[in-house]
Length: 466
Image 1 (cartoon, rainbow, N blue to C red):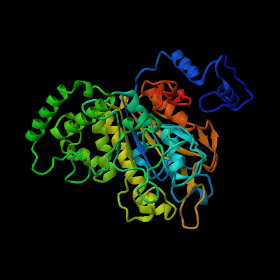
Image 2: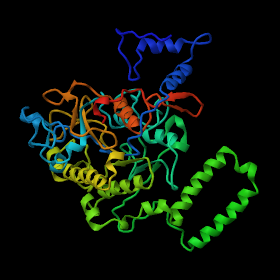
Image 3: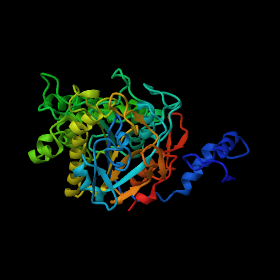
Image 4: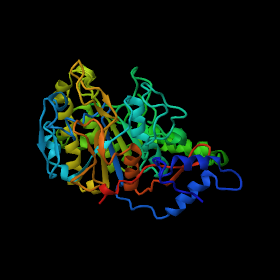
């Protein structure tokens, strides 16, 4: 029988450290950890209702500054407050940075969390926490790479494992670029399916939907090959498969055929290919998102969830890489110039456009929009007029898909330097996302060796739910 020790600090999954050590020592003659998890899953046989049929994650890689967005401190000293003021919102008592007027007008659809904590100030390892809900080992390791022991699957990998694909599209897609370390090539840990295996990796699309010639990435027919040729080759392949039944039924080939079918659907003009055709959108809609890579990527995300994709994660794509800090949120220098000139105005436009567009289409109630980042920024400016990395406290926002609007959860201290009330960990945020999708945190997935593991070790934030 499990015992609860009130005097021992609890982990994200609710068990104490002492209890986990005791479980690790159980062997023959007692419960194994796998059996404990199986029983725990059985107790949750009534999964939560599916409120979020789809999830769109807007991941602002580089660090979303809490002081100028969702947690301004107008009474703090100038070196903390910064040069920008705050404005009222549709939510009584909630103020946001003055650079976010469009977002201020829709906070009645949003829940703002002001007490996110990773305790990690490195992009790749704090990002690993926000994408998986698991702490990286060790913390604060910049330019970390995927691999054991840091191979927990991303939310996209979890969703790929739990939800079937539809219409030739996978259940999870990431676009329009990869999370990469300083060399621009090596990916962050936590961006793939990790221990679930490569077959559950989210699709990574390196693309620019704002390009006039944009089409399905990798979906164009080779020169000299018509759709008629494709159909003929498909017919030949089907005949071959019918004569090779035993071979065809192997797991490896079945998996191959699934990818093959997705590729054919993309090339041959089915529902999957139509999802990528942004020309079907009105000029007014495209303009509302902004005619740049990030804005059109978010518009594409909306089209993909309409086509049946369960989760689309959109990485921040700089509007102009010639700007300071590469045009991104990693504002170690010229912070004020960057956030006023292009960062927050672009985010304000795109985020508000997405929420309102989903609402007008009757999709917001069934689509969860997560505005997140890997960490915030330091309370004080550095010598280069920038703000540095800060994982001690920062803000994120959730909207739609089972989330109660007009909510502010948690708080930071007077300088937005530390969490003051109701600290929220990445495992709690992701447990809430999974709950809205209809999966209890103790829902099990199995790694490539068949071991059962719960999808989250966090607490569902019931205070945010409808």
